[in-house]
Length: 185
Length: 138
Image 1 (tube, rainbow over the protein chains, first blue to last red):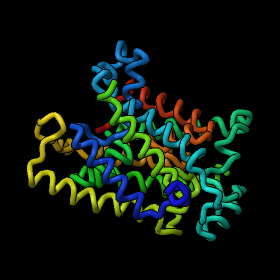
Image 2 (image 1 turned 120 degrees about the vertical axis):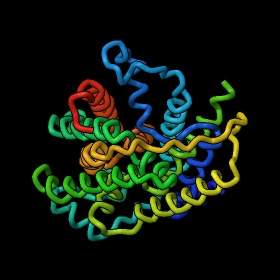
Image 3 (image 1 turned 90 degrees about the vertical axis):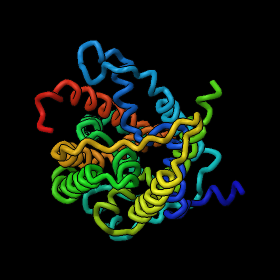
Image 4 (image 1 turned 180 degrees about the vertical axis):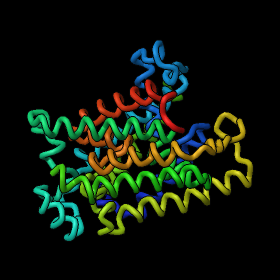
């Protein structure tokens, strides 16, 4: 059993499990939306005293923070007991496109040059990661949700606003990938 | 404590499935935005298709949640500019970091410590939105 779980999971198993998670949270009386945690963290840090958006009862969101802790543990388990020995199968077109930008694919999930320990010693990388994170946090709160809240929960409930948000996600992603990457990397 | 056990287990399941299906991969997000593989579209497409069926059935049978309350499905506010503008800013960050909020934290657990910087940025970004909220078009 463990051996089967260690292999890469095909996309359809992932889609099924993600829909199952959304269903579980609805059944628990909650709603699947991860970026709400970022707002709770600001509120826990005391931002509610100065900024209205963070003046709310974050204790009602503890369940979501617990979910976040679980997600971290799940990531840890995937790199230890469930670690796969096979390299990831990335499209060869993507491999060659990224190589042209100086980013080499070595079969692992993320480029070590951006997300490994060495990222802390490169000011340009620190700046990129900080700005990237900033846009993720700012944008998800501005749009009222991220991939889980809009693309999964919102689209499942046939919400037109969520479709507009997802279109926005793609406009931004395509601009970054096709117009800005050649300037950045 | 026990009432939180189900959330931590659901979170663990989320972390594992996102990693094992490579949805937390920066490379996979690049592949998606370059339209060079079906992989990510398959994941999102399957989740949304099943999700639509699940929500439809839950509404149809008027399912109650675990505590016996009727399950609420909130309609999103209809004013749309914020979805397009906020969504576009989010997308810029998503493509650059290869991670939306969930995968940022899953990747930290996996050992990609550079994601700690992304997480810090995301918290600061959320705070800045709170500060400038009233000056922004919605």
